[in-house]
Image (cartoon, rainbow, N blue to C red):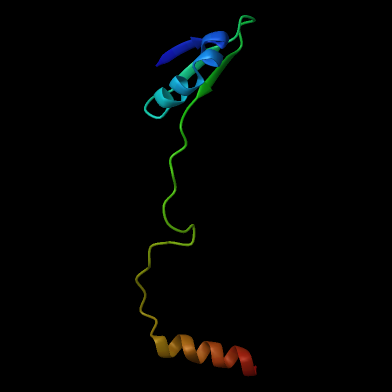
Length: 72
């Protein structure tokens, strides 16, 4: 983990962000506060992409349930 003072981080922000792509970076203020910078992982695909499940329900069963819900 790389550690920068606030002043160093401010002067070299681009470098700090480049390092944070691969590892956590700490930024320390003079008053003792410590902050972590980490890269968020890019999400590819849709949040609606989910794995399917195995079931014994047939398409015909689903269609019948939908028809029943519309007429009932």
